[in-house]
Image 1 (tube, protein in one colour):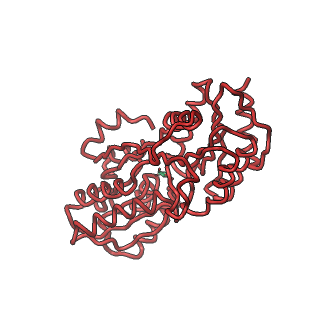
Image 2 (cartoon, rainbow, N blue to C red):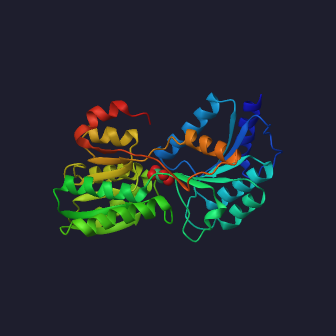
Image 3 (tube, rainbow, N blue to C red):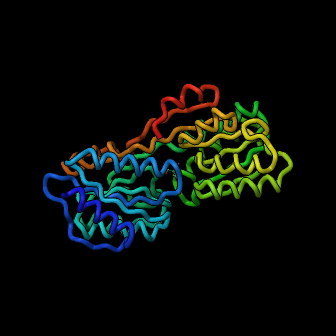
Length: 319
Ligand code: GZL
């Protein structure tokens, strides 16, 4: 009964985003309000699926869910709804790094701890307004992607960078890691273009189409997520070139589409970014509700995958 009602509540919130319904949490169920940012990528869908699966398989936890369609104002409204409902813990991926202090203060004033998930906020946001960040090390991911791409290009060439959502920590920090590695280690590699494709396949394709029209020589592409890499692959093919050969391509996330592209010889590498965080969110929420201290950063460990081993690696992938 609880689950069905929670599902109805979550659906109502996803649609109306202004639902202010009485809290359904009871003492023996941990209620977590999850304000998802959107459904922009395969990675994001994998994160949402993991939360839904966890919710279905555990009776002692209730995830309430809302989708902000990549709009910060919607995310803030949804967080406010969770505050009104009196959930035990709020968890959300900040779509951008700034603009959260007000709603985080409201949550703190309501005595509801907040967990940042899969993205962070900027250094100007007081750290005491959120309990922790559960996320990957994006700077490390950018550096690993640079090594994969430079290896695939043979150490030299002109590179187009497809950036994630403007202002998102995952984009800012992957760029930081990638650009720094190139600057420090690769004198014969030049980043000739760096534009946002907003973490979506369609926009990644658009940016790549424009770059192909603007530059006679492109040797490599670094896409801040695999969805934009897959969009770039489409653009490169439509331009009559061979992705993975004429233009080397590396992404981040480690979604199934990237492994399929590597097996097909159309992509050269991806740096995994674990989207299956539900268990870590619950474990952290349980500690917070019990009054225990938690680390300020609960870091996910991620793998690095090149096309060389994709035939084997694809068998191990779950999203
Ligand atoms: C990473 C996450 C990013 C993914 C993208 O933790 O925030 O957002 O890399 C998604 O696919 O859009």
